[in-house]
Image (cartoon, rainbow, N blue to C red):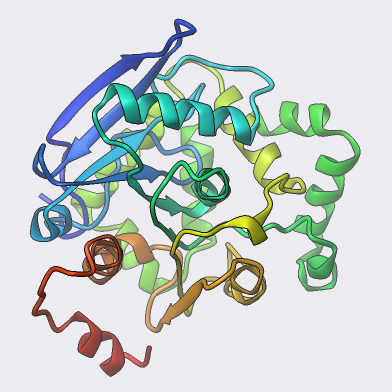
Length: 308
């Protein structure tokens, strides 16, 4: 048992109209508030969010394997727009509509933003969001190795995709741990979390290749063909103050490009924010979608004490 994650309550696949299947996992009550989870890089449907959070908030959390990851059918050359189409169809087939809320974590963030820009979701929360590092405004702020990767994706996306396809579950795990501050290692090295994270990584690569992860990464590291200024749904963006991996400025520029978006920076945590601080994140999203429901909770005070 982990302090940070629960096993899924339900697992399954849904066949789309073109014959492909999408894998999914669910937590929380079947009649709860529908929230789709667009998970981080190379993590399958198996990895949810903080233990007990969905039950406490009455949320039906549905994590979706993007094509080529986990048990979802590969879709070579897919785009952000293709993912939006998949989400719309899954929403209808799984009875999550007409527009569920969405939670995008890490590399899942641009895919979630594409859904928000297309009006496929009713509200969006981004956690430790991968930023648009190919934005020329970030060039001087990027570490040299990342700047080189961004340039390679821009110059030769097919070649870059082949390089990313060389990753495997162990390599991904080592990369994440090597770039994590001590506050995040306390999460990642928790025995229960380590088992859940390892299982999610292993399943993400279970189709024998990293093509799904590689396609995700090329899309995320290139210029985003997403009109962020057209987003009209409520957007919250959360970062851990110790996060040095996802955004050069902890989302300041990203938030400035999304009308009405709000940013929260939480001290004492980095990229493991989704699991270390799940309750207030999910509570805030639920209150956005259900603003008229009376609530009594002290999570805002807790964040204030931590220096929000």
